[in-house]
Amino acid sequence: MKKFISVLISLIVLSSSVFAAGEVTVYSDSGKFGLQDENNNIITKPVYKKLIRLGDNSFIALKGSRYGIVSKDGTILVNFKYSHAARLLGKYAKFKNGKGFGLYDEYGNVIIPQEQDTIDLLFGGMFLVSKDYKYGVRDKDGKILIDYVCDDIYMPKPNIMRAKYNGEWYELEQVSAETLTLPDDIKKLKEDKSFKITKLVTSPGAASKYSIVTATDYTLKVFSSISPAYEATIDELMLSQGAEAISIFMKIGWLPKFPIVYAKNYYKILRNPDNGPLSNVKDSIKQEL
Image (cartoon, rainbow, N blue to C red; front, side, top):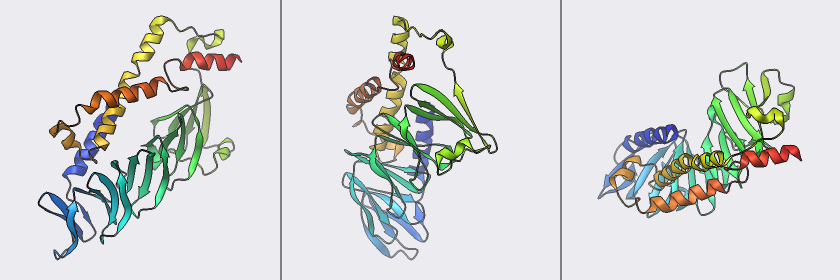
């Protein structure tokens, strides 16, 4: 729910702002939008359904039913081929179509190629990415800091990262800074005294070698997937509105889509081989082999 609220707030800010990039502003005519300079000279005709500022040099634009990027001089930097769009950190565009998610900068350069199952923000301006149920971390330039080898990654604090690798949890803490900054070469962490690496014990029964999952445990694990599936569904429906949070509540067209999208996300979570309802059982088996 916290993720949903944060997305909602950021999208409301996006949809209610007066967009400008340098001396270029957005104007509207007959329900569509174009660009003009400070003297009201037309740069682009009002042919776009939406224009969302991207850094100081461009705009995320919706033309017809597809998103792309248009520079402040009207040049098309990224062709209109994406069904979903969102702005990250004010200057990155996250796009999606049938091939998955990709990330562009405000100049139309590919930062993260469009082969990701997910792209999310982490502390320190890093990006959490996933492919085929494996997670990794990329920096703001798209460089891979942690390859796609982890079952799960999250950051409970700005200077702490927790990663699940081969069924076991590890915690990386940067003790000398308030915000964690990963080096270009992750292998350097072993020699860097500013980082502390700890192996986490998550199960009280770990010392007995075996972990028993009862029917009740299994039921709880299955139902614990409801919340992530719900959040993923809301995110997807919001992204389909093009970073315009208000429209998802004002229009009812998304309602018939909700159960279908929800079922798809719930099934995706359940079949995750590394982080699904039976992940603890599989982790115990791995450790015994």
